[in-house]
Length: 112
Image 1 (cartoon, helix red, strand yellow):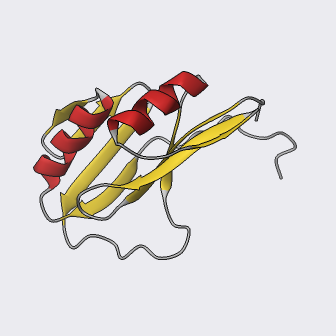
Image 2 (cartoon, rainbow, N blue to C red):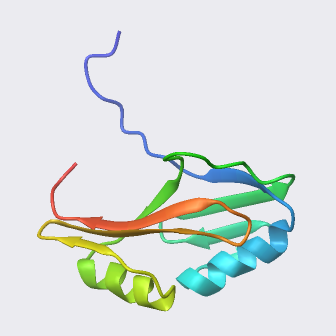
């Protein structure tokens, strides 16, 4: 049994999509990432879309993009034309991509 927490991080998210290449381009355009086929590349981000029926999201299922500052969240919320939650140490909004995947964009001012 390990006594220390291993250095591990989430590397990528792989999701089914009706139009993988198109959805990858949508994320690239909205977030300033780069797309190649069904892949989306950004700083610390890899999204992979493969041909398939999108997941049926219900409840709180989503994935999140963490921003380095509150202003980035606010700017993206304005770009998506969405309202955002704003508190002293937290700012966030949730949205859906064109295929129904729910994502959160957030900033928190405390170490993990």
